[in-house]
Length: 397
Image 1 (cartoon, rainbow, N blue to C red):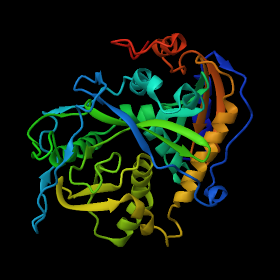
Image 2: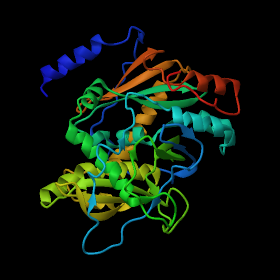
Image 3: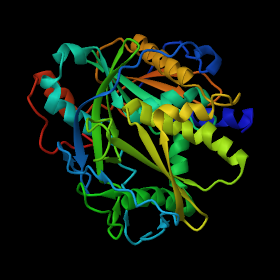
Image 4: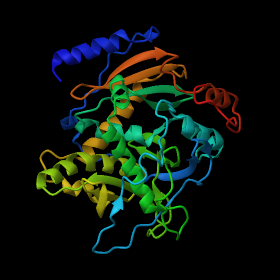
């Protein structure tokens, strides 16, 4: 995209800015990888605090009912031969992506458990609360060349909350998603259906519906540098035969990718896709990613396990590869940037951090809609120190 096109896009976004935009701080955060190539920062081993489930109607349950169990096929010379197109589109119920959930499900869990957190309200007051997916985007930013992002940040009772905002470009891309890409998305979920059972010791049943409303989410705490983190991430399954049954060490991430036969294809895979797999799994403490490689007809022909802690070895000697230290140092720098920028304690005040490839991170300030994301039911419950969440909080409240 040339500079004129970038300028036109920026003018469009500028023209659409809400009227409640406030004077913004003039600070910027650079993203050049060379600036973050120091030693690997401290990252505490993620510790699971609890979990929650979302059912077929996307309703919240404060338990593990949606957890599935890793049940791979027997190893033989034939390969698994899973048909990832089976059931599409007749047995497919995709989540409504128009519903912007923000942090709502995580906040629901937090309301139910904030009084039981080790360290109590004081620990939470200095913490950062967000989704694992938002942190993943921060980790990969120094090497990302395609997609920008926006993160809304609000401080409330000392805690910094970070919630992603869909960029205009991402929204346009989603609404214009071609049929092939929609089918590829289905294939990823279908692969999980072939690899997971509903109960330990039972077998997968790929004959049912693929419903992407259903999710099992782990809630964890960790620390990056001096930043306390409380975050949640969706987990594909747990391995009953894992060396450790203690989560998150027993969790498994499942992925699909196209078959590759040329060294150049593998190099690209290691540089780009493996970076995202590493960031996603490392943050959550998931030890292994199991990948199913599909042929052009949509059949999985082979499985390969990528231990998370060994992924960097594939690019260690690649001059155009990625470096975990750069990823984590940038993430720590962004969190410091956000903590130092968002100083006013006000759930209705939003600092919007925006980034496009090739540019630094910028900040703008807004009050209330459309960027305020902490729901009224959460703010009121925390303010009144209510013991639990309301039964049916409205996601748009």
